[in-house]
Structures are given as structure tokens and as C-alpha cells.
Length: 113
Image (cartoon, rainbow, N blue to C red; front, side, top):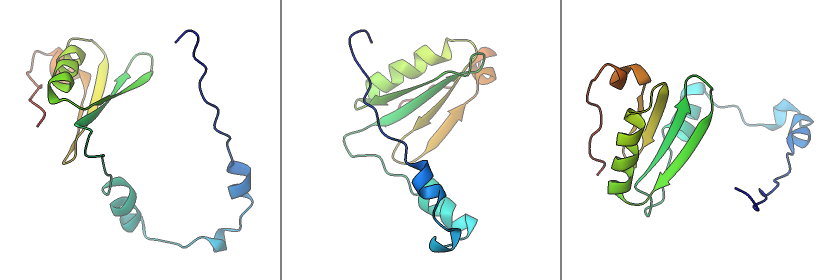
């Protein structure tokens, strides 16, 4: 990433922290989960998102794929790396694959469609 500078986005948490809690509309936990967690949307030009986390260092990397073949290749690559957990998110499902699943020789990669 030499020569590139990341774009700075200001953090406005103080502005929100000063707002009285009664100014926010209260919602039930289940309603929030349905709205924000289970109601995710992926743009139509994106096949899947893959988030890999190194269980040893805690570092996280995210990958976005438009072609299923490229996503399949990345999944196969991740299954060969020890101590890496990854999550695959498609339009229809979210699956997390822990390292011990494929470190024991179990076959876990399936085609993304």
C-alpha cells in the first residue's frame, strides 16, 4: 500500500453521546436483529463477501468477489492456511468455517452459486 493514503472519516461519537437517550426510539432486541442483522443486503453485482480472521494474531481481512470462481479459489486457499477462520456471506446465507473443521482433513469447500 505504498504511496496510498487512506481516506480519513471523522468520528462524531461525541455528538451522539451528548443526545439524551429519550430522543431515540426504543425497539425490542428481536426487532433490531431482524432489521440490522438478518436484513442485510448485498448489491446485485457482488457474488459474495469473505472475511478471514487469523485466530493467532486476531487480524481481519475482507474480500469482495463478483465471480463465483474467484470466491471458490479464495475459499480453497483459506482452507490450506492454519489458524484461519473465515466467514462467507452470500445473498442467501452466512456461513462461518472455524479452523478446526478443515485442519482435521474434513472437506468444507462448496461451489458458490
